[in-house]
Image 1 (cartoon, one colour):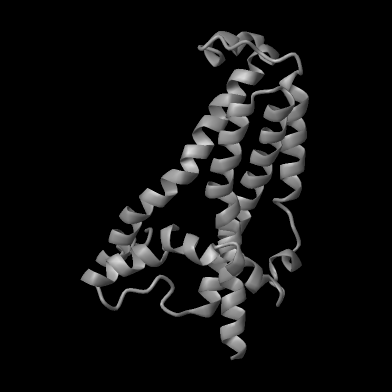
Image 2: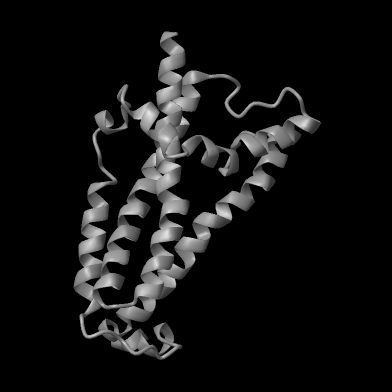
Length: 200
């Protein structure tokens, strides 16, 4: 018989609900990117073309399929990076501070603003219960998710620039930075801070 699932504490459930708000930034990038590629790849999939291209966009002269395959191939490399990639170096911490990652942390999932809001009702709430190992593992998992998405988004933006769709390219760059690049930087910033605290 399967073990009964332990319900989350009320504080964690509240935090989960609040985390939907910053997570929406990521999906504001992902959903249109998926739809964009369906439109661009429609000619390469004749049986599905009527369903995949309902807007009837004027397709670019440069075929999309080779770029899509290249983007997938490059992205795949970033899903199998060695563990050493996730080890932070001493010089990284000040760079992330200069890039404003501390300010981004206020708005991120499980960020300062959400934690502060939850603590108004549940003063003892912490994200990782001050467990360094759990916190480090969580940052690596998040980076492993967002980094490949960022690479795929960057390749998509390059293709959009190449075909002259500059408005969509600007949108994809901005949302990719907010939804993927800064989350990656935040994970590395957090690991750098934890490393400094562990040797303090």
